[in-house]
Length: 206
Image 1 (cartoon, rainbow, N blue to C red):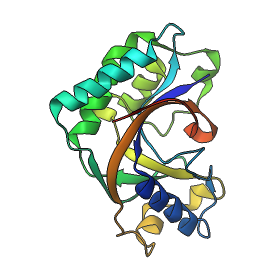
Image 2 (spheres, rainbow, N blue to C red):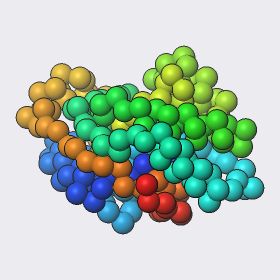
Image 3 (spheres, rainbow, N blue to C red):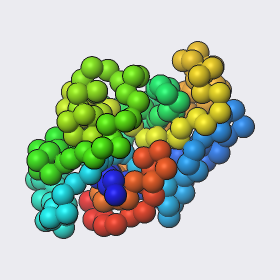
């Protein structure tokens, strides 16, 4: 099973992201559909396969304490839509030191527990940058370190994504919208379709 560690927005912000996805559906068939119980809108810190002896409770407690000690602001704001091959539609986030330091903290604690299996090596990484490809084939996740890319995934376009280009995204009337909110909790989740936050396995308020 692949797992992920994420930061979860407040319910109000999640509902705004879900409403945005619904607004986009007439233009693009996005998958999976987001919700507040399954397939949560989220900001991934790390994804992959982890050894079974990982002490998640202690890890999340340490991350919580680390963030509190640094007295980081838990606020976040989106800056617009972003399209990435092959077919991903993201909500870009303003630079936020909390997200970068939390990702660094989690990765340093988990990097020696991450592994790949044979099927992972068959993934098409042709659209990845060189560093993203290196990250993936070592750890099983592309957005690590200098490649960390804070975002909220709106979904993967499942029809005609190869015809989409950046101009299509920029021409959407909703491009200049903003979603603001607070980080509500950190979660360990089971990865579902297209890396989604399918099921929450552990959660801690932050």
